[in-house]
Length: 217
Image (cartoon, rainbow, N blue to C red; front, top):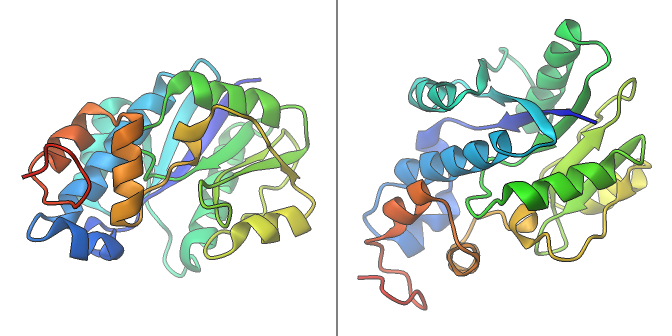
């Protein structure tokens, strides 16, 4: 099964507020953009991914992600937050390809590895709807809907329990840490750097003073 991924990205100026204490004077928008660029580049390199649609109103991010090969979809007025934007993205994909297999993927997975993403998507293909919990075991980094199934996203906060309650199958694979490791805090960033992040995140994080990161200034 070949998937279309829908990736949501809020305006860069509003992104990653919880990283402020860790990154000091470094611009959070630059980190958020680096995370998204490395995430989308890895997704496009995955054999199970045919297309990536980024839902964003940020013009700078749209240009940079579009240059990688992603399709850029503006968030509609009154979309209703993250879940509304994801539902809009899935509907738009299926207006063009009604039988598309659609999955959402967080934009803050800078250590994402194409092979691990492929394993997760292959597992998701066995179920009508499926999801992968984040590294903390509280949230969700990927939600997938097979052809003919509504995505029904329920992200933010304790989304793992909500997706499970909605009837989605929880994917429980070992050795897919890069698909689980989203980055919201300094601790998350340390963990992602330990896994090995993409080149844009590596460059953006190179001069940060982050306790516990060897080589940080």
